Amino acid sequence: MTGDLKSNADYIKKFIREAAENHADIVHFSEAALSGYPPGDIPSFENYDWEALRAETYEIMSLAKKHKIWVVLGSAHYLDEQEKPLNCLYIITSEGKIIGRYDKSMLTRGDSKHYSAGNHIEVVSLKGYKFGFLICYDSCYPEMYNIYRHEGVKIMFHSFYNAHHDGETILDEVIPAEIRVRASDNAMWVIANNSTGFYSSWPTCIARPDGSLESLERGIPGIMYRAFPDNEKTDRFNSWLHNFKMMKLPEDEVYQIFGVPSNHPRAIDTKSL
Image (cartoon, rainbow, N blue to C red; front, side, top):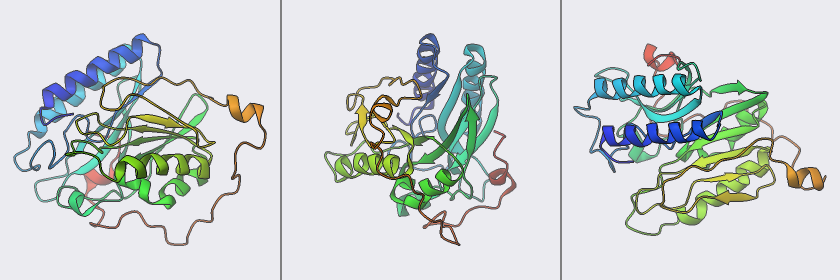
C-alpha cells in the first residue's frame, strides 16, 4: 500500500485475479488498501481525488463481477466537503455490487484528525456462514467482537494497517496476541490482514476458534488461502475450545472513543459508493 492510488488499485486487481484463478469465493484486503492511509501514505484527505478513487472502485467492482468473486476492500468513504470521510471496508458481491460497508468505529487520536467514526456493525451471510467486519484499532475493544458473537458471526474479516514504522514496536507482540484471544474468546475464525509496507509489525494471519494461528511471511505481499470449516483439531479434541459461554453485553455499548459518529446520509447509507 502506498499513496499512489493507481499502484494500489493495480495490486488489488492482480490479487483479485489470482484469488479467482485459485477458486476463492472471497478475497480480503487490508485497511485503506485502495485509498492509502493518512498520514503515512498521504498527508491528509485535503484535495484528495475522490473521483479517481470512485473510478478505481468501480473497476474493482466490475472485476469482482467478471471473476465471480466477493471482495472485502479497504478504502475511504467520502461524505461531503465539511465532514471527514469514513475509514471503511466495502463488501462487494460476486455480482459486482456493494452489499454493505463497515466503517471503523474505534478511532485513535491520529485517526480522528482524518476520519469520522463509524456508527454500526455489518453482518453478511455467504455459503452458510455469517461474516463480521472490523478495522485495526477495533481489536483493542473486546466488546466489538462480542457484539458480533451475539449476532452469530463465525468468521471475522479484520483489516489492519500496522506498517511503515521505522522498526519494531510493541504492536509486533500485542496485535498477534489480541487476534488469538479475540478468536478463542468468541469461538470465531479471525482473518487478520495487514499491510506489508516496511516496517510491517506482523504478517497477515488467520486465527482459529481455538486460538491457534498461521501466518504469511512478514513484509512480503501474497495471499493466504483457507477453506472453511477448518476444524481438524476441534473435531479430534472435544474439549479443545476453552470458552463456550458468551460474555454479557453491557446495556450501553460503546462504538467509538475519539470522534463522534456521523449522521450524514452518506454515512448511514452503507450500500452505495
